[in-house]
Image (tube, rainbow, N blue to C red; front, side, top):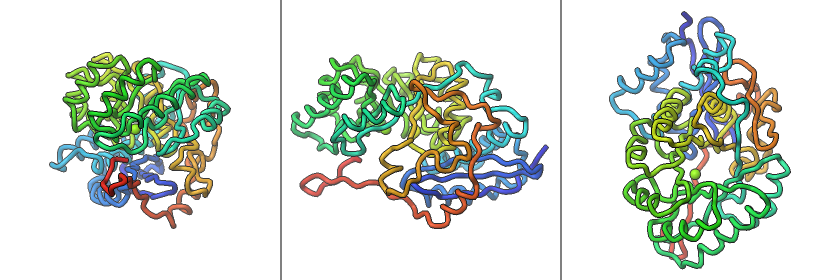
Length: 384
Ligand SMILES: [Mg+2]
């Protein structure tokens, strides 16, 4: 059995954290533990984990996951779980490479041949969504996501919601299905109004209509609308999600494979969701390793619905340096979109080959990414 000999991590533009694990048989695997705006914290968590990981048997992914979960005493939360995600994904890639099979074969095999994807339009402050929507259609997409509103006060003018309804109407008229991300930036008095106003226009889902720290308010909203309620990017484990399955407030769970304990935990969350007739639509506004890992889980998961893809996303393109989802891939055709789908990759492990030279080069001068800041006209802090 091969033993783990090294774990390296690389902070790379635009805002991603990649992990490489190697073993004494000469094999390697890539993971991603990106936690946007908290790079240094995840890197610190990885520094602590690396000490325990060296010398472990690389094949024992579940044992390693349990070792970090239980022997660390303190556990869960975005920082710890993102670091664990980076390790877990890299170990699945390494194991697939060792055995010469794609990861989906290790998860029971494919239940579909291709994976439906969606991408963002409109940025943080949606304006001219029509042009952006047409560009996504030209890329072969059938479904997009956009922010529902700009930053909004606890109680704001109901007129701020009118523009949201109009944008949804415009984009849907082009033939696209639309998920609307409330981004947790609406509070209860506005969220219930907006859900009601959107309902006749039939969005695919509304995402984080309220923050998960308000489970009772989400339940109330879910009971009052026919629009599917989606959330989960800020829930990190099966223990975080179980109350939302039990209270029936969630229709679509959106675990992020880079924050939710990697392939191992995302798979378990999906299985729990299936038992409650809840769909999985993995959150993934992140890098190529997280996307590839999400593809592998999607291919083997019966209740999978649709996968987020960061190609051309505003966070990738706003610096203007040209670094995007495909930059670190040796074969960029592996994520080609056709008719709204990405085909099942055929390669071993995660099915991608990372351009390590490029990763090492760009990591040399990648500064930590900072979260956005939004303020109301009175200077008060608003959710972003
Ligand atoms: Mg979101």
